Length: 90
Image 1 (cartoon, helix red, strand yellow):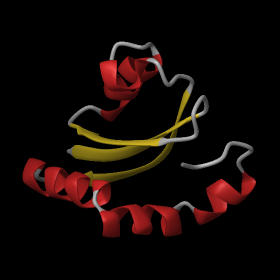
Image 2 (cartoon, rainbow, N blue to C red):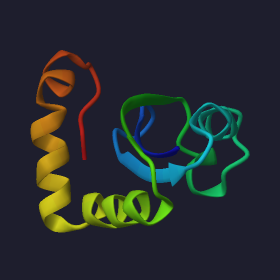
Image 3 (cartoon, rainbow, N blue to C red):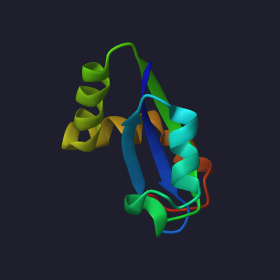
């Protein structure tokens, strides 16, 4: 399995999208500060993920979600989360 995941920085309110074959281990790396892209943005919350059988499908989905239409889709998917969350999304 391959996973596409979205983290929400509780420090700056921004989202981070990534993919990994081992979601649990990857999230642990993010939360412990071992990932340069998110180490200064902790604490982080896992707010969404999707599972894929093929690596290429996960990579394609990650790239889509990082683009303009994908970001709009994320806003729609996580609409309720952001309504209930005390941090602003950016």
